[in-house]
Picture 1 (tube, rainbow, N blue to C red):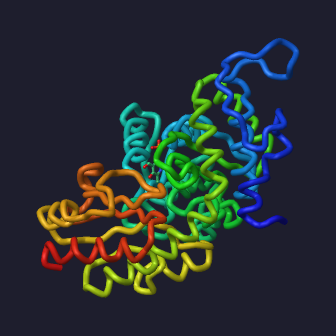
Picture 2 (picture 1 turned 60 degrees about the vertical axis):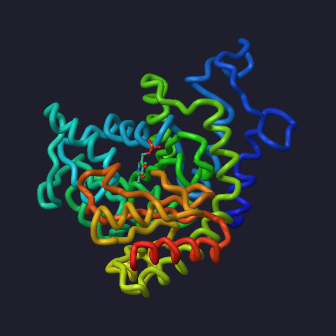
Length: 350
Ligand code: PLP
């Protein structure tokens, strides 16, 4: 088995349809008859190459979508559960499920309410407080009653964790984040073990029309080449930064800290602790002051890009604590990031 960087760079090589070393951008929506391609919504070289790389990294078959939310919607539409377990998850996924519930199509339940064909949705690490779920444990309990486990592994990335190996049935990613990695593409992925199941998802995607755009697929493919390298660097910096903030007696949620309640499980199921963390600055004014003082970090939502971002999370998700700041650590020099955090924390007296 080649390593993860080699896989990221070469797993799609046999799918190249031209002699170019770098994949071409293929914007055409239609293809000449009898060339093996017909219409872009049905099949597209760049999308298939992206799927080949993610499938190889995850140890399954990947299907690409126009966004992470399109991937989540495709899962709901394909598996049509009556009930779902929904712990701390990305607020967009929660909104999707609440809408399904409001329309009478879905019940949100606790694990004891799950039955045949239902979904136990897991996001590990979760957004925004990096809660860790033991996938093997959840899979054993879900499978015992005939339910399936869906794991949103966006925070972990395919370089940092492979949920199928721990019993998850379906993995999803917002490829908008670390996979594309440069805050310039919107895409999503679903990964399953079975190639026929992936074909079923693809058939439905043709009908729903939720394929990635050609440039987005290309940017995601371009980005994934360096995913393992970027993740290694960002996670190493995140570990240092989390320890630095934690030492100042600021509540810090990062799975790489021994004090994090999910640390031991994270060490077992994650290869890398990732680049996301949240800190609690106590109240909204302090959080705002801290963000205003930052100079190297960009104040913006989203995550997983080369640049470090910090966000007053309550602006995106009204259910989070008012003092919570979520940080996505990028690949700048860590000394500059630490110095920036140091001066911004001093500016608000922390
Ligand atoms: N899942 C998680 C954990 C996310 O953080 C996000 C976006 O922030 C999504 C899903 C949705 O992805 P997208 O914005 O690509 O639709």
